[in-house]
Amino acid sequence: MNKINIFLVCILGVCYSQNVYDVLRPYFGFNSSQILVNSIGGATVAAGHVIPGPTSNPANLAMHRFRQIQSNFSSSEFKSGTENNSATNLNGFHFIYPVPVYQGSLVIGGGVNKEIDYMSASRSGIYQYSEIGGMNVWRISAAVEYSKKLYIGSNFEYYTGEDEMVEFAGDSTFYFRPHYKGLGMTLGLLYSISPKFQYGVSIQLPTTLSVADRFTYSNHIETDESFSDTWHYKAKRPLIFHIGTGYFERYYNVFYEATWVDWRNLKFSSEEIFENDLELPASVIINQEIRNTLHPTLSHHLGFALHLPILPIHIYAGYQYLPVAFSNVYNSDARQSYSTGFSYMIQENFSIQASYVKYFWKYGNEPEHFEKLSVGIAMHY
Image 1: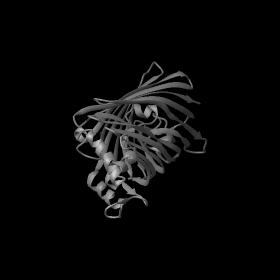
Image 2: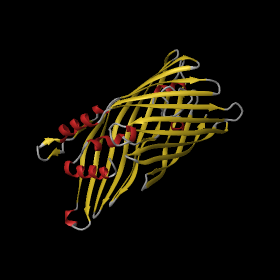
Image 3: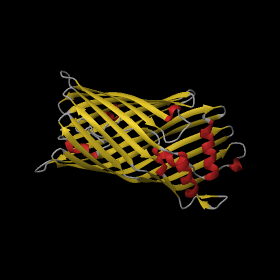
Image 4: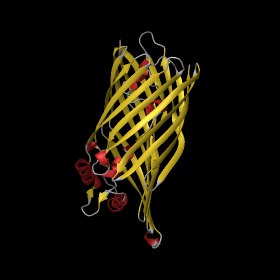
């Protein structure tokens, strides 16, 4: 499959209003969060107190003993063999606030972070395609030390975002601009077996996004054939399960996380969209296509942290193996990423942070990659 298939997806969108890839699109991009999460490849389900901020397990919050505020900016770039896209934006901010309690711990946290980057670009003959956008998540979190060595936590999440896709095809232009919003929740558990070893489990409950997809077709020759419309539908993401471990030595840490999703349970629903010929709700056909097209994925995340004994600096590295939910598009049906980063304490309560992550894969036989450089600050008090 080559880049002409993107054009075919757009054409199908015009004929059938929506298809399986449109339903998956809000959840398919490049994972993005605060700097230290990126630095260790997202292997944060059992990161404990080492990685502050919005990790994949809200129970990690309960291990933090200091208040913190952090924020970061990022510059992203997508490159294919023929095209490229770039963007610079604020990634968000996050706070941690331990609440004094008589016994154990109670910690709250929250903020807004860019959860997913949407970005791609390609050219094939007379066809040129570009995409740029993102999904932001507003969070409020709470975690407690439920009993000795056992921590539990929860996130309440509000999703908002948009994607912008443009397809130039000869004398025609196809323009899609879906807007997303929805609510979600994550539950997590962290257990410290010993000072050196702990494991974590978290579950992201199914999340339904409301989508308003503005579509415009422009015919530059026969202008009377141009039109625009807005499609309204819901895309329900299935449950996401995270499990992993953390190993802690004085000068280094090792983290591992596995993430499982059964994308066959992705659901489409709409009260407005019908299949024209059969006059059936589009959900009947599209949900059957989802079950026939998508499959479960098991991703692997590995991270390392090095704490130098002399300098006030922490160095991080990570790797991700990320299977995609559909076949015969990416070589080995997967993407991979490498990442690195650091945190340097300038003063006792002030540090600077930076991370770099590179996703790479082959789309058909064409190598592509996505890079993100982030720089931020953190205040501890």
